Image (cartoon, rainbow over all chains, first blue to last red; front, side):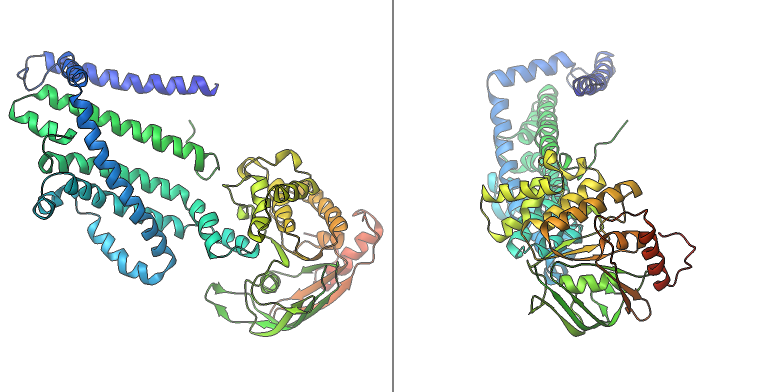
Length: 263
Length: 255
């Protein structure tokens, strides 16, 4: 089987599972067991989605959410990546931060939203900080694991070839830990994406996909809620597959540091 | 190319990196451009000795000098090749791996590229300059490792059982290739192995070590013309002698 055929098959398989699920949903929606307002049919949802895309509101909502998520995610990388590396390289830093991370990581970011609202009010600051909180720990944690798993033979070989601390860091440790770093970014983004929608529900006003859902509740607009969910799912999926999938294919997969599952 | 003097080197402590197979009072003098093999049973400390010469371990007593300069830590006068294929950087191509030492040395392109390509040609991998290590066979990866260790032009090449994990046929090819590379570059080589035939094929002199304590038992000169024929009577004779030194039954089969 050629690569092209293979990817076509993957696409068909993915489409099929989505279609079957959609058909089941449609059947339930049309069965009349639930009021149509609460469980709108797929054409109604699509209509709401198209309308909101046409007048641009959904695009603006998505843009706001993306802005918050990318801002917080970038902050998380800027803080989490060096923190993870420092933890793996210096025992004192590890001793200080590891218990802290272990204790803070399990707290759902959503649980912090009310507190952050008290401190920072409603709007971008709170939502971005929630994203930052959600994403930093998986980033630091995975980087820490990755640096610890760098093959000591690479360090030895590089040392024998005259590498100083700076070169060791940039040319051996970072690429050597890259499978974990990419996994960390994936997990961080996922948690950031989950976090931002939750935060926007109560800590954003007027704009954001989370806010759309929460606001639609007031007017019993289940179709708008579902349309926003579709957008949330689509963007999350696109990032996972396009951004992180591509990053992985171009780096660690190309280098043979992670293998593609067979069969 | 530099001579190496190893004087009364001992190391019998547990290092922070784990327990090391100890060496006791090891003294060896190695001429410039000489090929010396170190053989011995497991636990005789031959790898420990190599790691001390490489500067990865510090001896408790004694000292080592290369070209009259005492060894402290690792340095660019030595190139090191390990047994494990994983020594190559998977995120760099064959060329990128070979260039690493040159980069560290501050050699700029296109000079760096030219030298690295030249080294890959020396190990007959010029067609694989842009391949990543995971696309290369074990033998090819070890050849890249040799090219990488030679690229920044160290005077001494240290090799720790580099072909031990290869199949027998590839190993024979690699030994021939290494003999050619040595002939061309005239590096001083210290080569650790537990393979008697390999030692007789490659070495000018074989240092035989014994375990408990890890020390030099005897040194055997291999006076065979090169290139050597592993099937000649003289070659097999040398193997028998070496095995006798190692305390093997001479009717046994070389491993």
